Amino acid sequence: MIEGIDAITYSTDAWDEAARFLGDWGLKNVGQSNELQTWETLNGSFVYVRRTDDASLPPPMESGPTLREVVWGVQDDARLAAIAASLAGVRGFEDKRAVNGTVRALDPHGLRVVFQKSAKRAIDIKGIGTNAWGNVSRIDKPSPIYEAAQPIEIGHVVFFTDRIEEAEAFYASLGFKTSDRYPGRGVFMRCSAVGGHHDIFLLQLPNKPAGLNHVAFTVRDIHEVFGGGMNMSRKGWKTQLGPGKHPISSAIFWYFENPCGGLIEYNADEDHLTENWVPREFAPSPTAFAEWAIDGGIDGNTRRQPKVEVGTGFLTEKR
Image (cartoon, rainbow, N blue to C red; front, top):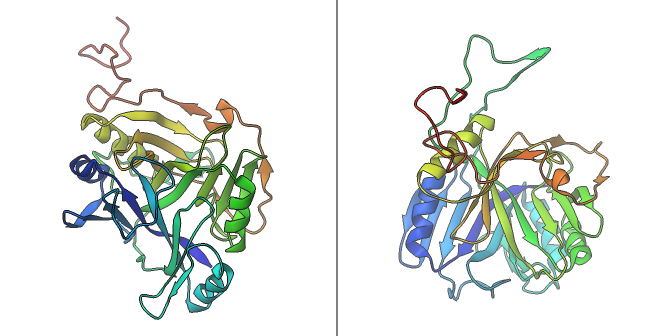
């Protein structure tokens, strides 16, 4: 089985800005040279940043900063062998199991996909539950307040596609399962039958070429989404949308513009699916995308939307 994303590689020429951004995002800097930045999540997923013209990378899907490679972790050697057999003959196929334990190819958009035995580590981290009516899970314990986020793992990737049927078939041939879809417009896919709602989302828009939409990073809970988002706001980074809630996956989100390419998302409280899940179909609409969302984010200093005048007392005071 495919277990999730082990690593991603961005390319950008906004080198110093990218380093400052990823540090503020909450990733651990585990190595930096003039050609390569290496960042790590809490469970050992890696984010690599290279120069746009780096010769070790395949040609980009799009101009400007973007994602160039996704490394998927698999359970064992047998699964890796099965993926090698599925990818044989695909453009860019390389079987490097004897060299570095990987199998790689290019997906229909020209993105390099790599498969290896997962190197992520198990960690003892638990988010704080909510006290829903009839299902109290937090007793004699207040909910946490986060001053910043520390992403646990790379949760999912989202790409614009101009060939949705071909792209879905490609990932399905590798074992990905369709969770939900916008017919003819978008498909949510998860790595295996049992797992989070989606590990990849493919979105087709009229006259929109292939490219990166966003990468999501999973944090502990809704409280860390808010704390991480307000920290990024305090640091001066621009919210694209959020916080908010996706009704299709139930996840709480907060999106920021990313100098490494596309958008970047804090994500928590995603639906967990099994082999019993039946894929649904949705008509594209603003309410299908977001049950609710704050345009412009929350300012980390005032705790309100940006540019809203705030008095010196409680935020609910009438003036």
